Length: 200
Image (cartoon, rainbow, N blue to C red; front, side, top):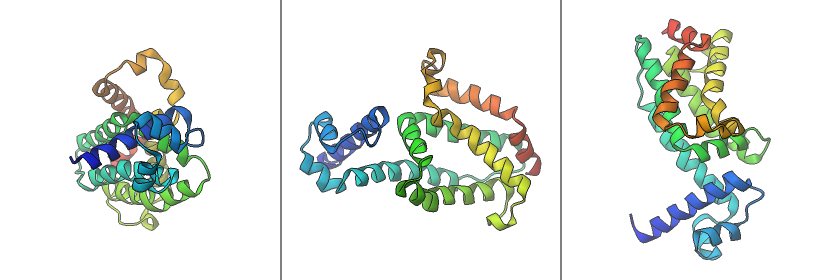
């Protein structure tokens, strides 16, 4: 990694931490520059604006995540669905602050949220429909399948949409692997996962 790329990566890491702890509106470009020990002009050079910086964080999160989903091929074996659930949870938990930050923003009716819905989340839904139901469009998906998908995504996203629950030391001190194992086992007992598995 070149020095310029290292600096850009450092700015993104610092921005993620500050956006997570102070909120997007509560963080200024100057705050980020000071914490990253860089000039404000350097941030404007790389990202144009605070919004551009935030969008770069979203791209750095969603593109590898969607590539991971695209590389998956589920079979009739229930273990493949459980494996997919664990991979998704591991990815989200490995990027915990960014997961919380982005999913929190997606609950707001902002331009950013609408853009993410049109691009990344629409693609995520399409990939889930292909993987879970072997169908190519939402038109083919039944009402019951839509509810199953809604419940599954709700369970996958809940830990990152309610970060205040994670202030419990029993949760925050758990390793990523331990969290993924226990949470996915509990999800496996959930009716929506069983319903999806039954359709495969």
